[in-house]
Image 1: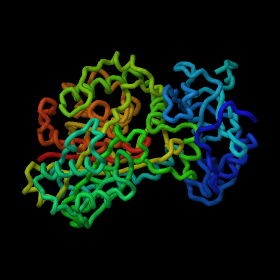
Image 2 (image 1 turned 135 degrees about the vertical axis):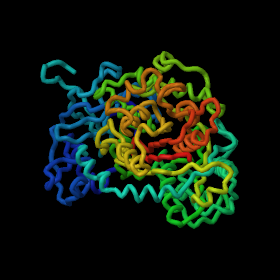
Image 3 (image 1 turned 120 degrees about the horizontal axis):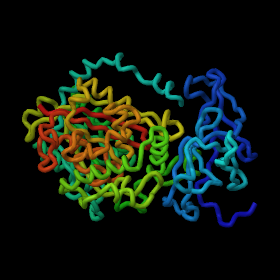
Image 4 (image 1 turned 45 degrees about the horizontal axis):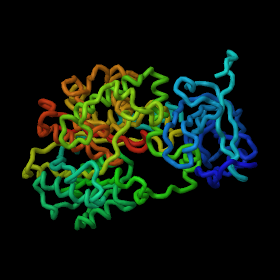
Length: 148
Length: 405
């Protein structure tokens, strides 16, 4: 893997509860924590369910599909690492599994009117180093066949 | 977390012993308020100098000597903030509080101080704030390092570093999508707040501002224009509280603490139950129930305006209008001087001052309004004020209901 310039943004440091998540991301798979008592997913990874407090959780692979719950277009970088990318788009994506991830959108025109809430997206992984791949999301064609 | 789950976590109002709380808090008064000698751009003063000037000025306003202070509350002087400020001021308190919930810290500390005074644990409490938000930019000293294993470090920082603006923008965008809130409606708040600032000699921004000015200003983070965002200044402020008994002998008429309540829902945005809501929906009704007041009893409202959107959503969450109708509610300059909903009468964080954590200044302004000290911006006959402050990323709120005799 080659990169045009060194990667200067903060890189996640996997913790005991999140190591599995980041290992799967490195394999370009999205896995989520699931409560066996509530029988639903939750976010972010913990040894227990934040809803029912059961310490009975497992990992399940997610579909990688969801929709943009909300987004923001950044015209100013508050950290030098983002300066070359302005304007760029951050988003919260609501996955089919019902949890929301904080992320960035790729493959979109960073302009008001070109990005919209509820547009369907799918996960893509950006390899930032030999250990970490970051989940980001890109638009997919919706049910009517229109490209978002 | 689904909304229903969040609701389950909150004690229903009917289970609160509201009457007990009401009697408890009627025993405590705010007797002194003031800013530091200078606010705005003050590079020649340290953070602690701003704390000390504000404390001296607020104690003078109360007519209380420093030697009577037995409680110190603050959050803005490092990790043991109240210990640092008490040492600097030369006070050995027997009640202390360094509660740090961002901009809502001061209203929440006021709740704690009022409870402690009512319980007889302390008699004179000073809440102070000093912050060099403007002059410390890039200086680095003020911010602690985040634990690299913290949820925000792993799941937000890889995508965004830059403080509240990018986070509030995400919340605002969802509100605009869900409820049809417009840029023009947000601009109404910036313009109305500026009109109040033009009546306040201490306000930093006193030039006229129009809705067109707001809409033609540059994007900072869409959906926010420049004028949707608060100022970044240097400023100090302080508030003095004491018992009803001691308040009788103070320089100024007491302002009573009728209701006070706290709530927080999340630290990271993806844990927010609903991005269009804030915990003001919990702290607001509880404070109002404790005070025994309804919306129509409130004469003046001071809410934390980190962004125009913060005001709009907070008014909804406090129940001044129906959910989703904050935009229509603030339209037609309703919150401006002369409008029927006096709001952020000092000019707010948008136009008066905002050193990073603004939350002590709405308390100061509410007290001045209830004392009738506000000159050209005075709300005639103001007897009851509501203060709501927000900290973090719409994370933590404190609501106060204050009243004059």
